[in-house]
Length: 331
Ligand code: ADP
Ligand code: F6P
Picture (cartoon, rainbow, N blue to C red):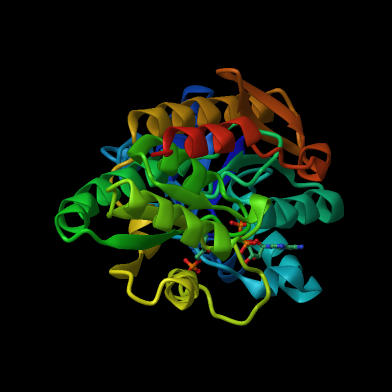
């Protein structure tokens, strides 16, 4: 193999740039030519390709977002789109591809491998931490840090006003961001899809806290808590607030959605190191002739695993952490 490509796809996440940096520099050190594909599969189909050298990835390790740009690309799910994607790879002579994204992006990579023989390696880039095969995905740690820092700020005003605030965080159908942030910022309650949504319990908790003199509460809710489709994304916090007000009409309460802030700002040191280690490992896989592998981390060790086997795994929810959050929040 002489030429490889790298692209970022789906929702961006902190640590993607570190992975791009390491993929490029490591590939160059192996004597490979590296091509950056811009805006994910959209750029692959449209031919947005540029050769990258060491200078191209200078000063990017820490940056949020992705210097390659990203996109969601419905055309990649069509035979015509995939054919065009292949033609771009052939035009540049790219035989191996590092795809940095979530499970959807990995499905796209798998198609390129199965149908056209392109060697593909996936690096898990998503703040959601919703991939079962790896302890952590790139960006999760940074997103949790953003939530914790912002809730710390919120506490100032909420506590002096004796207010409760419902704060909605991202994660799609996964509650990991809410759960880990709740622990680290000492939230009074956390609602995650894995445990269901119980407004009566929330009202009971707020009532109890008030009785013992604790009148400000932070309630972290994961955006996926209610998947009944009655509201658009980004409105769960409002809905939860209304449900609580129905039960406690006089409560001093506000709601907010942290939204895309969670994908912004510098990557944490953890995500930078994870991105670098995963990028280096991905290139090693390609150099060894491997394909259809995804990179993960388990107990601090970076590994590669068969893509389909990895994607078939069921995500495990950390019940003990959930219980701990509840226990530590008790007044
Ligand atoms: P993520 O990679 O973060 O899970 P998406 O699910 O939006 O994000 O997927 C990113 C992109 O991957 C999609 O916009 C599409 O281009 C591609 N993709 C997703 N699923 C498939 C599929 N089954 N076949 C081909 N490409 C896919
Ligand atoms: O998958 C990452 C993620 O940030 C989810 O947490 C969120 O639901 C979604 O992407 C938001 O997507 P968009 O950037 O398209 O609004």
